[in-house]
Image 1 (cartoon, helix red, strand yellow):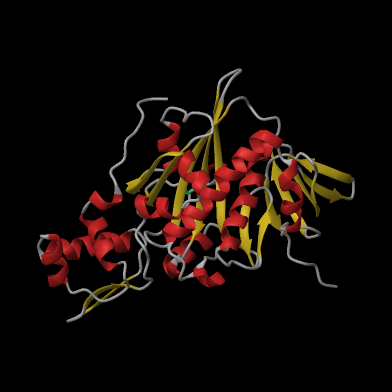
Image 2 (cartoon, helix red, strand yellow):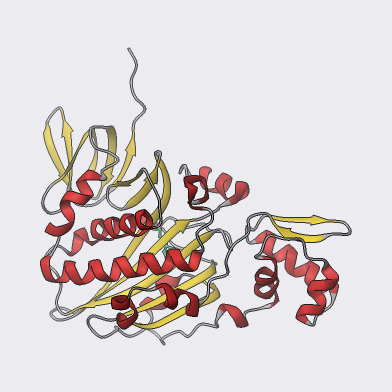
Length: 342
Ligand code: BTN
């Protein structure tokens, strides 16, 4: 496991983090004003603004007016997240940190000891230098324009339907975002969040288990909030059409509130899943199924196949209707095939 890793809070981050926090209101701030507020030279501010751009932030610089973040945002703050947590989640969260930069929030939690059963450690980063997606892909997120969140949970023993945990988290994410006003969102098996066929967020679950005994999962959630043209283009180059909460009408909801809603719903869902398994989530997942009836390609450990998506079975496996009959997939990747016109 290596040494457990500590992280520096976002508030005390490097100059680039402080410049980001000053610019978060989306207004113009002159180089002079920023330099004075932060006790550094104007050229140091200029350099930090350049760093922010390299990290994917969309920054306007206008002569005689200064710098402006095109998309105003709310810096991630642990205290603000705690304020918005449900009472149950507040009691369960044993540690909650927001960092400016980390390689991957999942990797840091993986390096730490298991939380006690029923409790959770929560970690967020404004910038991930090696953010990880499913199936070895990387995860791109600009500072201020996304939520990169991981939390841990220790099951007293390995749950029988652990492989379907991603579906449970998908349902919890939907519940959280709907409670904030998101409409028309769906789930793409196994656990992508979609709005109008585009990817709004994804989940990466990693497991640390002993042969018999407790099993700790690290659940990583990436949510697009306001990606900006540059990052949207970078993601499109990887073959994924992404969207964000701003395009879906939730642009004015502060990120700390969104994080709190997500953590509150997920921790409540984990407790239910630990007690009652997958059953309490199945119908809700099926109602949100964005693939149902669509022509798809599936590629997984069991090979690849073409057919029509026919929902999930009671264990959360994807059912694919093929000319050879219905095939079951317990893991894999799905892409929708363009409709064939006569
Ligand atoms: C996917 O491929 O859809 C899953 C994306 C998961 C990304 C999140 S961001 C926070 C956490 N840390 C990581 O490195 N990955 C997950």
